Image (cartoon, rainbow, N blue to C red; front, side, top):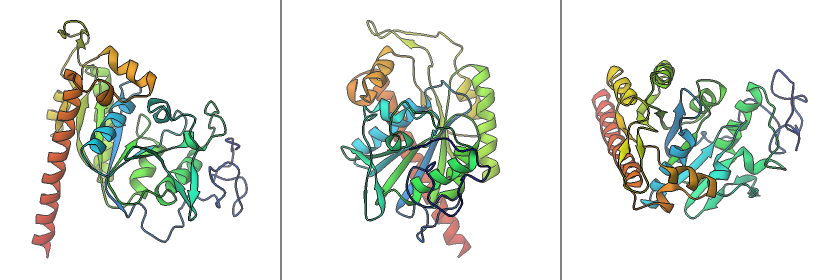
Length: 304
């Protein structure tokens, strides 16, 4: 598979099979599936961050795994085209997709369905060198050409910032969609969270809440917590913008170890305080989702 395209419109050979695309279908910035994009997906949650390195992918993976463990039909979609980390974090980097009925089959990990550009590369170390239209096109394929089936939740791991990938997923996915924003406590990270909040509001996208990661350090020996960075930046920003604050997660060596081993933290360290905090965040997220649905139903009923 070739990953290099210099075409401004996303394909060097419009109207024909494009080797720069992950499938043999015609390359286009618009999807051609007659069904509504993501029509079988009840709720899409895009995990975003204003900056890189805040643990966004870690939150996305553990959120998806925790939802699946609770019995929700869950998918995990990695739209970080240039740096897909989900396959490695789930020990799936050597997996490759198959097709059925002209649809791409996601990789299944237990009951969790997973899709990433990493599953479509000939070598997982290959660099993907694409411009915006190419990324927009492949994200559309991830929505319409992957056989997701019926899902309660699709968790989307987006790259940092407010660029092509989060814009493409919000523009192309149908049905209920919201953003979960991950930050670290420092003001430099919180400042970029404000941009993510404004991005969502300009697009009319609901914000499920903010998670503050790397909030203090938990000693693996005594479970004592020490504040390394300043704390409270995420909660302060949530209050400032009237957004739900879902909780704080400390720095813990086990999180890094579990990511490297490809075993989700909430599974490998399920009895720890931090794993319980992850579960609390999931509970708050689910509770907020229920309230949002009730508010939407009330508005619909009032309008009728």
